[in-house]
Amino acid sequence: MITQFKAGTSLALVAALCSASPSHADEGHEGSPSGISALDHAPIGVMGDHRHGQGEWMVSYRFMHMDMAGIQIGTDDVTPDQVATTVPNRFFGNPGQPPTLRIVPTSMRMDMHMAGLMYGLSDDITLMLMGNYITKEMDHITFQGGMGTMRLGEFRTRTADIGDTKLSALIGLTDTIHLNAGISIPTGTITEEAQILTPMGMEPTVRTPYPMQIGSGTWDLEPGITYRDQTERFAWGAQVRGTIRLGDNDEGYSYGDRAMATVWAQAALAPGVALSGRLQGETIGRVDGMDPAIMGPVQTANPDFQGGETLTAFAGVNFAATGGALKGWRLGVEGGLPLVQDLNGPQMPTDFTLTVGVQKSF
Image (cartoon, rainbow, N blue to C red):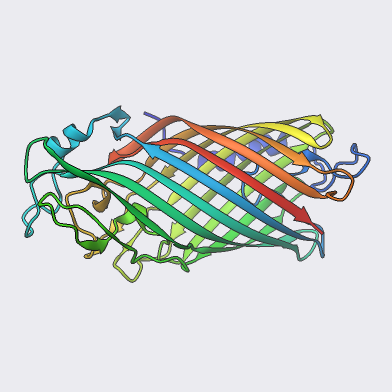
């Protein structure tokens, strides 16, 4: 079991790193003849890592993919049969609700297309706007009736729509440190529906459980602090960020607060190519409250079976075009594999994540 990543401890780590490193400008490294270096940006999976000079713009696009499979309770693997016969159904006692979970998710995929815009309001303040479009798919096994391990069939649910919009300011404290002051605007839907297969063999269309909804439905604060520094051949950094939910949404619940801490290091193979390694720890709380329209003998409908703690390792590469027609364009690729996942109740653990992105400043 891993230790939860508390914000205060992580901030102290960032402060210690900052005090141990010399100040260095955030923009184009002077060791590169073109003034452009692949080290000038953090790995593509890190958001809000760098500032821009006054009047400078940057546009970006990221494609983010996540695969989940299997079932875990805490850090232990369990089988669908174990879930269907031993895990109590929170809604037992309501009409048609069996005593144990009879619908078990087995895999999930999520794709996110994210568009971003950054603008240097001054040399010390950069504004950032990010929007996204999200697609989710989840596969399930339905067990027959109210008990036993006889499988009735399988089904897949799918949701897709515009997600929540992020607006933030990066406020410089020194050349290497800035605050991340953000807010999440609830533009994503929280009333998605899909057709399911019930243990009694019916196929109704119902509101999908919490992991399959697209937005949060709440206004959220997203504070953070970022440290990043570099030399001609190496770069390194650390970031702490959080999500604080500001009350319940219109359906009567809020997703759990989040806290994330990450550290990374990069090495340049050439001015336009840099390899990276990164570690990220994250803690996510359970859902607070309940949507009365989300009910069923499935783990994803239980607000207590959400969230947990994870530690993930990432490897990536950044490319920066230092000349020619594509000068100034950047391409980043980063893949992640979980090292530890300690999940609340039966949940699907993450198998891997992949982020690919392009950026252009002007």
